[in-house]
Image (cartoon, rainbow, N blue to C red; front, side, top):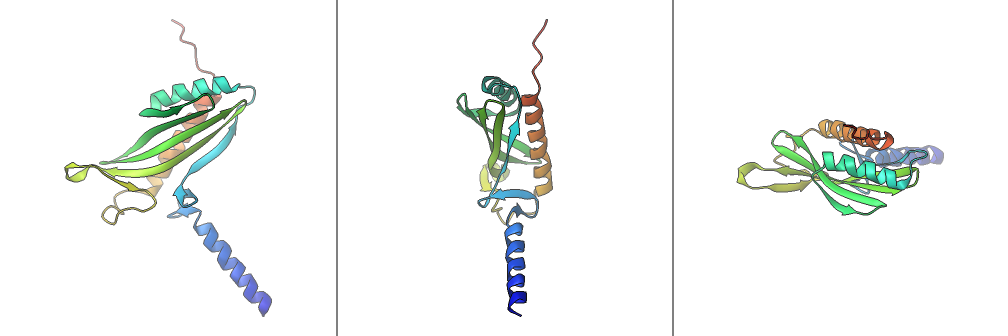
Length: 161
């Protein structure tokens, strides 16, 4: 009987922990914050080249760069969703042959009523909980990640004219 109770408690605890790994069962959480992160191998590509490719991609896809070092770039951008913007921060840490991306600091911005209101994505304001869709955000963030991976793994065309 004790072993059955222990097994039940372990099962309940593991289900609870797994449920906390995703916001609304969709967006990945790390320490209670929506976070997309991974280390990507790009064999035989030196850190300087990864940096150049990442910076080129960021200049075409994000609003502005917050931090620009040879081993770390941080940029702020957004995903458009109707009358809202979902703000996010992209950090790229760079080493020879690999880089780590982290998409964090997700906030949704409402421009209604003539002024801007900003809310953490993890704690949506009661008046807008039905106005945005976590699946839409997840799809578009994963599209950004795919574009970033392709840009860094592919040698850019030289401008031959």
